[in-house]
Length: 116
Image (cartoon, rainbow, N blue to C red; front, side, top):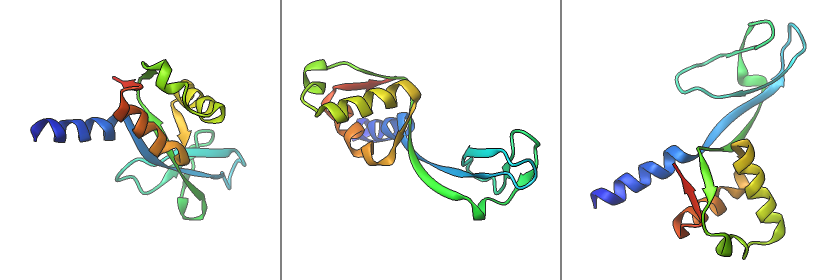
């Protein structure tokens, strides 16, 4: 039972959904893409450091990946070429659209994707 709890925590830390605010700074006009930080209620523009209320921003959920790699290429090869490409792009960038979150978790459960 203790191992199951540890594994669940491991999944949450390595592959997790995060909230991203997307908008434009009203002062300098710079485009903003800022990941939510728990407990922080404002967004700061990285260009002019203006404090901005994110309530008017578009909000998107994305998958944040830790240090992950494909370990079982045979199982990975059973995915469609589109899904293979999406997973490889996610591994390279560290971010993925939320739509592939279930696929990433399934790959981890099968042992095809290893995250450290």
